[in-house]
Length: 434
Image 1 (cartoon, rainbow, N blue to C red):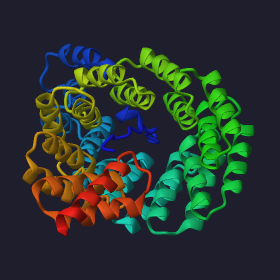
Image 2: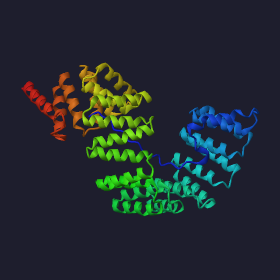
Image 3: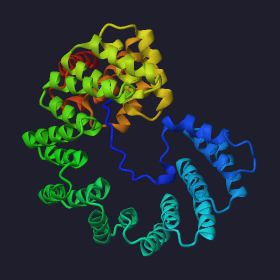
Image 4: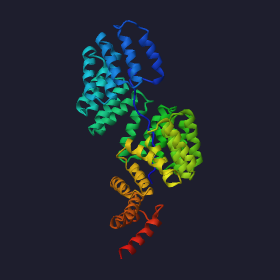
């Protein structure tokens, strides 16, 4: 137990032109910002804001966009960037106010109504969001993004038929868009109509036959139905169309892990990490596969690689701490990693289990019991966590707690890895109680 899995999800976000910010453009934006010496030149402040935003300096970026709009109130790009900044910071009320200021100077701009709707969505005012998206559609009926966001607003109000219609309209306008198709598939899955979901993806692939992400979605559906041969074929087709598709790499690797084809899964991760050397969850997932093979040293090397990039990445911290505690590593280092993981995610029950078990190993049974009780409250159906609590209570001398936890562990599973020791300890408790 105590190993934390890693899942990397496709963002599913259709970006706006004014929010298409990537780090590679930082130096370009800075050149734009500094090529103008006039402090009253609004675009200079706008480009400076983009550069600051790319560096995650939101307060200074906000000031720069505000100055750009003070100098040029009609500068649409600055309005949009400021709204997106508020959205990124989850300041939805401020985003809504900024959207209204945009619409005062650009009352017929459909993008203004769309971003206003997104701000209302953030505020959970779905009725106002719906109205805003409908207005955006009136002004730009052939922009598929307006229909997509309208579908999301309907979905938030549990109006599934209206949402389905909106998503279908978005796909009719843009047959290559993944996001509305993914929403349609989710709606069909929620109804238990998995066959219809599969057919819907196949139908869309006829209109978008070179779409790697749609083949990935198809593979996911087949995988959920345990149609592994069809799932593998779909994921491989996605990679054939676009060998850089991260989601297809991950899903095909997960399929191989399920089939215990570990070497094939590792090969996929190796290829993925060559293309994306900063993909921290990728190193952790590869480490977990080596763990499944029983190659602890190799697993630890991958967890360490992840932590070199992100020293506070909880799955790698947790799993490395667990390996050190269980497989002959340094307990002080294990404890330090587990404490760092807990500081980052104090409510994570897997981390609490790991830290509690390390305290058990270091014979600090009071702390162990407290943490393991917390973990069992959050994941009560895990036999290994129950076993850990039982053993900690036993060593602490709380025999009723130990007996109850170990019995519960065995009721949940008769063959979890430490079941034999749980039974032996229960026998000893019985002798001690007599």
